[in-house]
Length: 184
Ligand code: HEM
Image 1 (cartoon, rainbow, N blue to C red):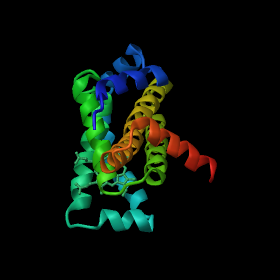
Image 2: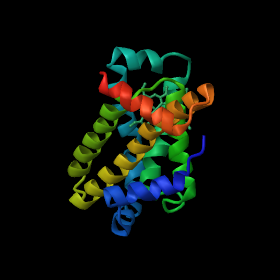
Image 3: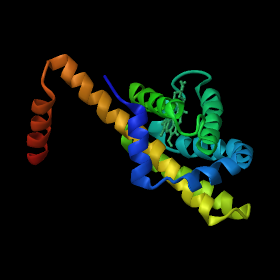
């Protein structure tokens, strides 16, 4: 499967209008992001844990919740720092996160509401901390970019698996999807 993750990141930046001002605001608040990250992780995993299906996935193997808590904190902080200024490293990291979720069966119906919870909780925390609305907007944009990566990974992995297994061409696959959709 070939995926130019950096090109995808740049396309998404255009789509959500993530500007250099947004990036500066995020970076200027990176220390605050790291400070609130553990509480955000607690809130996030408490939310996932209240859903019986997601709770079963979380507890499938020992130490998973603990590991996730740590990786969530890193992920959350990286949204503020941009890692390499939202370059190749950031793009590859987000693509990798997407692929991991596909591999373990995390479907869009889990991920979209979960990101909604992050956006809502960060907005609430931000207001309580007296942070400006601009920061909320910038964070909303970067959350949408990260969400799009996870969702796109789902589509790409499924498509490339079908093409590989069947030997179908991309055009045939698209036609079959369109035909299938029209009969739903
Ligand atoms: C806002 C959406 C989400 C974000 C930002 C997120 C973030 C992450 C990150 C950063 C990792 C670590 C990837 C790595 O190992 O490099 C991860 C793994 C994982 N996530 Fe998510 N996640 C999200 C949604 C979900 C949802 C809805 C579930 C449902 C149960 C879930 C369950 C998992 C599991 C089971 C792992 C693998 C843990 C392991 O065994 O190492 N995630 N996630």
